[in-house]
Length: 227
Image 1 (tube, helix red, strand yellow):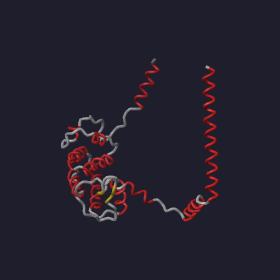
Image 2 (cartoon, rainbow, N blue to C red):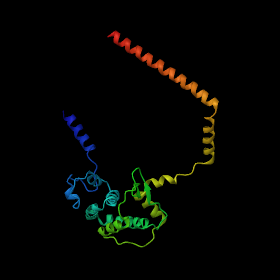
Image 3 (spheres, rainbow, N blue to C red):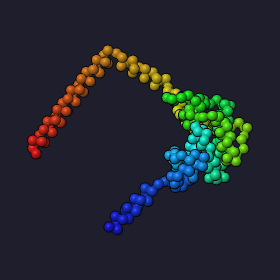
Image 4 (cartoon, rainbow, N blue to C red):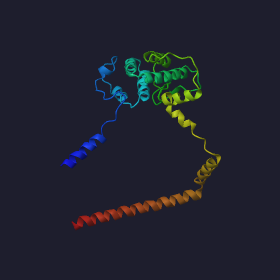
């Protein structure tokens, strides 16, 4: 009995919830988001991020989509440490530069419902993203910078916040050898000899499946008769 209790306690410790950025958050939105008194599952989910930067990404995204979520930015800034505010100031100023259209980055996108300004791959930004970033900078007590970020900094922030799928376009181009091999294989599948052989294989596989099912049915009948 003692051994079972020890194993149970060990299992409880191993499966306890991961420590979140804001700790254990009660599911009472009114205390967490003063300017939005409606119950909203997304806010408590956002508070469950494990580090400040990922939390900033989620909360800023909600504010980008809905201007009434400004209270969330104020709440996040109120919990931010000195290092957090430094990180926020750096990222927000680079985002401000990108959304000002000063870089070579694509800011418009489309999904099944709409076309609009991108944030986290979705074209759901409502209003001016620059004005919202200026508001966020003010909450984090970070001055707006007119300095031009390096291309490496812009690319990193753009992929992290604005368009994560853009990184997929940076995959190395397929070599000519692989391209020619692929084209050769495609051409081969169009020949009459290949299609005839494929039809023969399909017929053989269908017959094998029929035989297998018949054998399974025979075995089931035998088991029932032996009971």
